[in-house]
Image 1 (tube, helix red, strand yellow):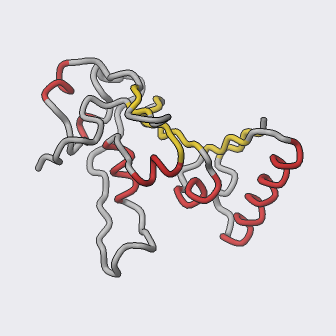
Image 2: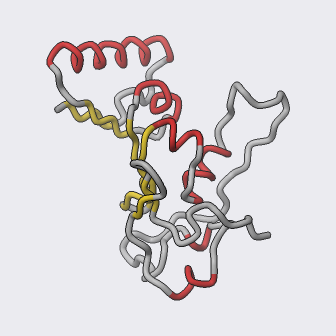
Length: 154
């Protein structure tokens, strides 16, 4: 198993591509697994078969790249995908930032840590602990009471 923590940070795109292809070749040659820890969604979209989205030190969503990019279900994942440019969107489409600040990891709230920033929160989110990961079909997992099915507030 190869674990690569932010392997492409601060590299130009040509060097990024060469490094990622080299890692892919090593994985194929030695029948190994590759875990890439990154904030670069472009890397994830191209190279990952399965991915996990984390917020405040917890996995909030997991699934195949197709499931996560095609039907994101956790509000944080939805926010991440709306905050990066896409080639398949119309020119001039505005990016939507995730408002608010991340939580203080030393003094975590008893409820979902993303709740203060969430556009989809329900009443249950204010009173219940952060939910465990649950299947929403296939291998797609999400830790959210609304599971991305509610209308955004505000």
